[in-house]
Image (cartoon, rainbow, N blue to C red; front, side):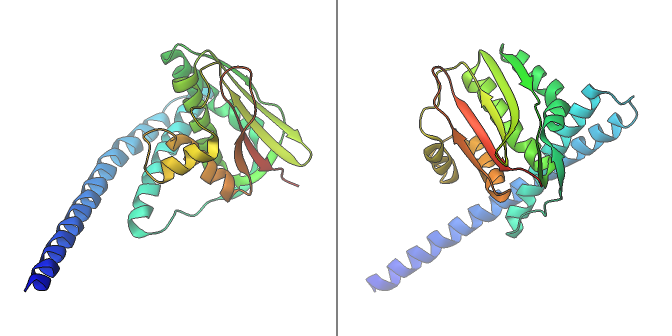
Length: 224
């Protein structure tokens, strides 16, 4: 008798967990639907404006937000949206997002210096913008001071370096990424996203020693 009661209790608990899981999926789907509409409307509104570097930067950020919704929708179905590979000029990519990053830095009272440099990679332009944007946002929000962003080409690799003047990382990059992926921490999700994008492009996210603050490097293979 005791065994049957235990089995019934387990079945009821599993059903409750399944129901809560379904409810979370429904809420996520509804939230995604409600956010997608305003994003689409905002992008359509930009089409009526004269194109400028500022408008292009806003458009890129809106497309990044839409990409996050696509990821959420794909996760519900167990698959990831396909990536669009092309030759990406990393210096140009940084220039295209500069206005949006400067606005974010100003909101947090931080400075921003960008050195576009040279170097091209084969990858998804929007994904690479997502990775760089997360590194810059992390530096601005948690580091502060003057955030320096630099792209360079060295020995067949393209490096995007993001350095800040804050207190530095609370743990090594691999540990922060692992904790974020395992949902054991509220921090590090931006680093985890950047690291995953780097891995899918044949690269990696690392850090280098710095006398002050954090110094992260997005290391990618150069296009040939």
